[in-house]
Length: 71
Image 1: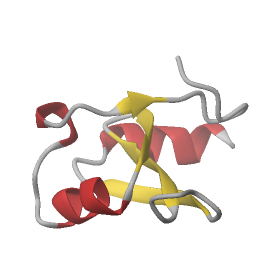
Image 2: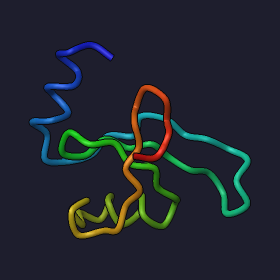
Image 3: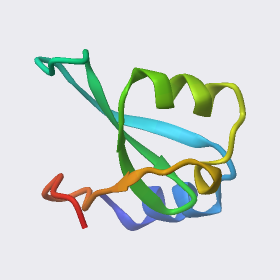
Image 4: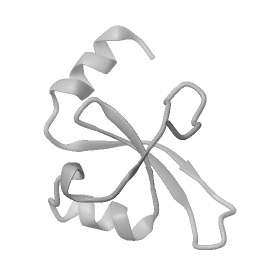
């Protein structure tokens, strides 16, 4: 990712879906960016983010955007 995109995500109060991964037992998983951090979430958590619940209020798995590995 380029520096401008990272800065835009860091300054953003909302979230962005970065990737969608299929093949999980519980349905697709998403990598989302919120507040300058990247998280792996399921459909239920994605729905909560869409309803406006801040990422800080949810128990999210933070991941490295380059390797998609948990931190």
